Length: 197
Image 1 (tube, rainbow, N blue to C red):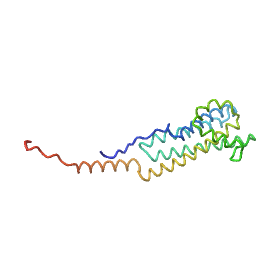
Image 2 (image 1 turned 135 degrees about the horizontal axis):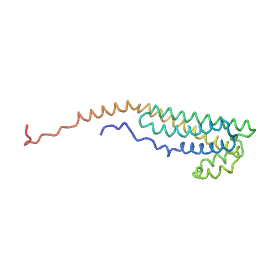
Image 3 (image 1 turned 90 degrees about the vertical axis):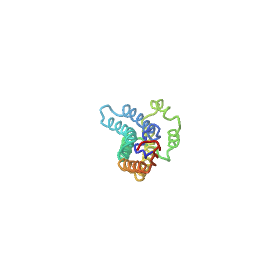
């Protein structure tokens, strides 16, 4: 059988980074509409950045079937969108006189551990209404750091795959050559002695 060049891709919903970006979007949507003033342009900007982080992972995964270049580009757009969102949260904390929790903060390790539990996404909706703006902002900052780290690793793998497998045109060419070679090397069936010439 010749090489298959349109390999099954997608499956983004099973990616941990996609699940993390879903949580980032949910937190950001709630945060922007509860702690930012109505009419503030930052509301739409933050929500769109969070959405872009999530959607571009999905679109990049689906595009990988026919274009590794597009997959890499969209994954990078997802990372850039989340980095923009990170700045918005950091700006909010700074301009509102709130604390950004770092490694030496007493609540940092507990919050980080909570985000890595198997039940985090399931428990998140109930937590949204219980946390104040400082807690939610720091929670989302922690998730953004996790997501951008995973996206950097994902980009490295995607680039390595591109180097080893090439783009779709190269894969199609290899598959076509393999098909021709198999066709010309296939043994011919001997004629039956009773088969007419």
